[in-house]
Image (tube, rainbow, N blue to C red; front, side, top):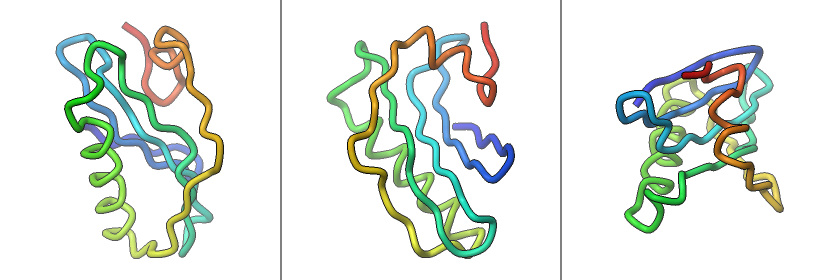
Length: 93
């Protein structure tokens, strides 16, 4: 697992070699409130608890930053895998 920060965002990502397995990202106000904006797990890795583990790790990271008011954006959008893999926070292969 890796943690990436950028402009009030917190991201937990799981990478297997050069393959992005999944990630979860939340935006914060920098003090007390965070909203989970994206959750992604590559199709080949779904159904084994990776999404749950990523969200749990994100929640721990936010608690470590003393952010306790955590919400989830309704209607999370699923993104195509290649679009996620070239996200500015994650870089590209």
